[in-house]
Image (cartoon, rainbow, N blue to C red; front, side):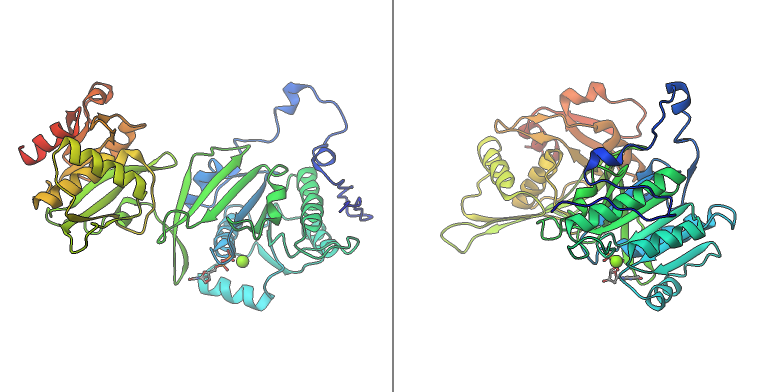
Length: 435
Ligand code: TYD
Ligand code: MG
C-alpha cells in the first residue's frame, strides 16, 4: 500500500517519505567534503565492554548510528540488548541516558527480567509503549544518546490503515525514528523478528536504510548463538560474536574451540580427529568422529551428522579407490561434535583420516590437527586462511599439523607447530598408519 507522509508538529522529526529516496536526505545544504568528513566521528565510539558484541560494531557504536538487530523470536534479542543497554548506560556519565523502549512487555516484566539479569544503571530508562507519537515525544523529552526499540514490529502509526508489524508500519515508524536519530546524532537499535523461511520478514525492508544490520541466530550451532554483521557502514562484516544462553542471560563465548571438542585431554581413540574451521574470520577447533562397523543390511549405511552427506559419500569413494579401503560391507557414520553443521572443505582430510582410523581400528595421535581439502583423485589441496587456522591450533596446544604439501612454504615459521605436508590421501595414510 502507499505510505503517507508522516508529520508530528513540534516533534522535530520532520517528514518521512515512503521509500529510501526521501529518507536519506539529511542535509539540505551542500557541505565541502573536508567538513563532511568530520562526522560521523568514527574514532568516538561507545563500547559495551562485551567483547563479542563490540567487535561486531567495529569497536562500539557511533553517534547517530542506526542498527537493525534481527533474528527469530526467542533467540535472545531482548536479552542481548537489555544487557548491552545497561553496559552502554554505564559507559558514560550519568547524564548520557539510554532509553529501552519495549512494545512487547510491560514495565514490570522488563524490570523483573533486568533484575534477573543483574542489569543495573541509573542512566538506563525504560518505556513500555507502542504508539509512535508517544515514543517520539518521550525521546524528545528524555534526549537519550541511545535508544533501543523492542521491537520494530510492535510500533504503530495511527494514520496508517495497516496493523502493527505490516511492511508499511515497520517502514514508516522506523523512518521517523531514523530521521530523529540522524538529525540529533542519537544512536538507535531496532529489534526485529525475522525467520529464515520468510514467515516473518517485515524488518527486512529496513536493511537498506539502516547503517548496520546484525543477525542473531543459532545458525549452524545448536549450542551457540551467533551474532553476525550482514551490513556495516561503520565496521567489519566478517566478524562473528558468539554467545550461549544461560540462567543469567547471554554469556560471551570467548573460547569457542572448547565448545566443539568433547574433551581436550581425551586419550587418542580410533575414529577421532581434530581440524580447524572458520566462523567468519575466526578459527575454531572442531572434532570429527567416525565409526566404521560391519553391516547387517544388504545395502551398507552411510550417515553424516553436521557434515554434508553427499560430500562424505564422495570422500568415501575417493578412499575406496585411492586407499584401497574396503567399505562395501561396512556401515560408515561420520559426525561433528557439538551439534555444529559445517560445509568447510578444509575438514575433508580430518574426516577421511577419522574414517580410515576407525576402519583400521587404529587411533590417530591426539596432538595432531588435520586441515586440507581432498579431491576426487585423492589429492590434498590447500585451504583459505591456513595461517590463521594453524595459529589457533598451536594456541590450543597441538603439536603437529597435517596439511597440503604445497601450502607448507606459505606458512610463517615459528607458529609452534610442526608442519607435515602431504600431497595425497595415500601419503597421509602412510604417515599416520604406516601403510
Ligand atoms: P528473548 O531475549 O526474549 O528473545 P527474543 O527477544 O529474541 O524473542 O529470549 C528468549 C529466550 O531466552 C526465552 O526462551 C528465555 C530464554 N532466557 C534464558 O534462558 N535465560 C535468561 O536469563 C533469559 C533472560 C532468557
Ligand atoms: Mg524479545
